[in-house]
Length: 261
Image (cartoon, rainbow, N blue to C red; front, side, top):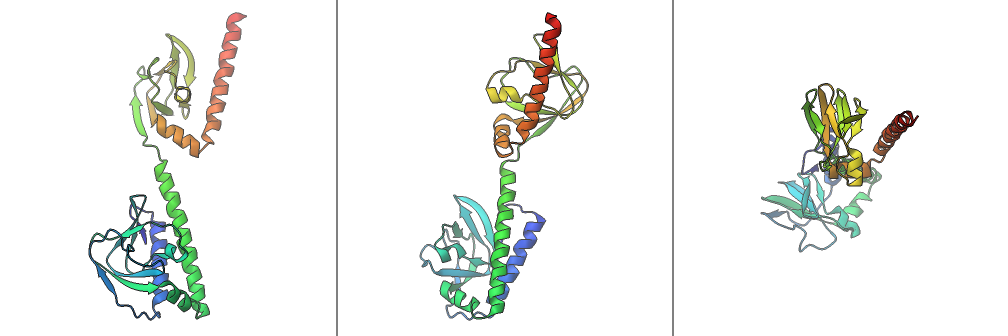
């Protein structure tokens, strides 16, 4: 069992272990139903009863969820386990010839329950598969919320953000330093490792100040929508932003107090 897309080495190793356990499970299972050879098929279980399972003998079978190819099965894998409990599952299909061994649900369960060693092996199989699915889900979630960030280089004196522009990106200063300039007056400083440009993203306002590189700068950019989505799933990011905004407000208040003194 594998992800249809790229998977980590650990996930691939666990998937191979699950396949090995499955093969050990049905090595002694005697099945009377003949093997089935299918060519390209959009839904392998379209005419099968809910109690039907398949062992993959050769070829590759895919499973799609919500129209997205998600899982890939090969020799030794069991298809249709969610059907055993009438649980919702994806659609199993193949793009080219596959050989499947039909198996009835009750036949498999009776076989597994016939010996304590098989019961233990079945438990290992279910726990390993659960672990694999959890890791696969975590991997896909990380991909989904991985910002398509980009690195930009600015020379000293170049404008990174221009006052009055639409706020479509959030920035993080990886290296260097920059000044915040409003109406030609320097009103603040951006330091290394600081996130900037996020306030306008959250408020929907245009840029209230320009950010000008004081030295050569390396900047990481993240798109507005992706940054908001990232914050929703990793709210701890907001803590740093709030601390930085509070520090800026404190600095502005001090500047204001000195001007009115």
